[in-house]
Amino acid sequence: MNNPFQLIGKSAAEVQQKIQSAFHSLFEGNDSSEKICFDFQQYKCIIDIGHSDIRSEGMSYGMYIAAKLGLLELFQALWEFSKTYLQNAETDDAPYFAWQVGFDKKRQGQFFKMDAGAAPDGEEYFAAALLLAARRFGNNAYRDEALKLLHAMAHKKPAGKVRAMFDPENFLVRFSPVESNDFTDPSYHTLAFYRLFAAETKDTFWESVYKQSVAFLKCAAHPDTGLFPDYAEFDGTPKSTAFSPHSDCFSGDAWRVAYNLALDANWEIPGICEKENLLAKNFAQETIRKMLRFFKSQKNPRADYRLNGIPCENSRPITTGLIAMNAAATGALDFSLLQDKELAAYFLNAFWNAPVPTGTWRYYDGMLYLLSFLALTER
Image 1 (cartoon, helix red, strand yellow):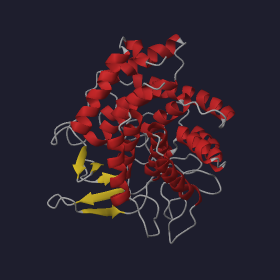
Image 2 (tube, one colour):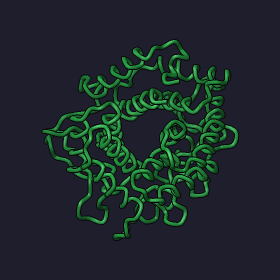
Image 3 (cartoon, helix red, strand yellow):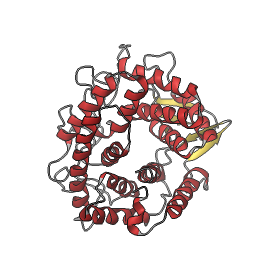
Image 4 (cartoon, one colour):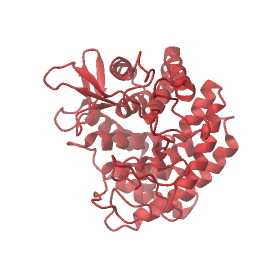
């Protein structure tokens, strides 16, 4: 089914209108309450409004969205900004991208790296976006950039305290390539991208990453609720940290794990880990069914849970971003089964009725909102 929204009576034209409306609000809407994408000279940048900064996460998400929608000018403007203001050139962090860049609100054009260190999900999305753009726009320069970045992510020789983004022994993505970060973030395990990277680079390293990431996620998922933690040890044990109070809980990062599983279930990349991908699809279906049934059982669903399903202390009401990710997760279900169709319809309907995010915290929720629609329409 190319349009899962048929389950709730929505046509392909209506879905495209939803996507265009969301894109217009987030990329072209009014400055004060809608848009997250802003112009600077010949560049464009995605701003986290609530934190008043620019993140590799948002810039790479924006590029991925632009590539998927075929928007070359937007893609190039975001990429040039990322190259100019986020990418590290001559330091130990090169060629990674600073995960957090600040700006002077009083002096336009004054950008500075608040933290030059990298968050690997940004690099994963940069690489995937560049590879997709190379195909979409017929530009091999984008592919060359992606291949250089991927080689560093996989094989960078230690420079000071900065290493490759993946542990060389277990092939799992690190929370950070900086020393003393030998744990992981389950949402960084972008399974579909790993198969794409393997196909494009011809480097079997990425096949090992895919296989080990699937095995890791099986360990990290709660057996009853299907929930994942924000951070985890390499054996899947939830990781508690001082700097993130909900790091051992299902929270903002972990919302994306089921989306990643569903994306992997729907991307066809012949010749790459086909046997493992089939097993991963089965795992994705089983785990996502558990998670969605858990959320459907909640009278007042929250955004932050212990993995056993108990709301965390200071748990927030469910957000549009989580509603979007839960809807995207339905892409892994088997629509030939009545119970899966009914489960999917429940979450697709909730997503359809959720407005495009606005206001102070529109950045993250808005990005997830668009990513979910794009994932569901390529099922």
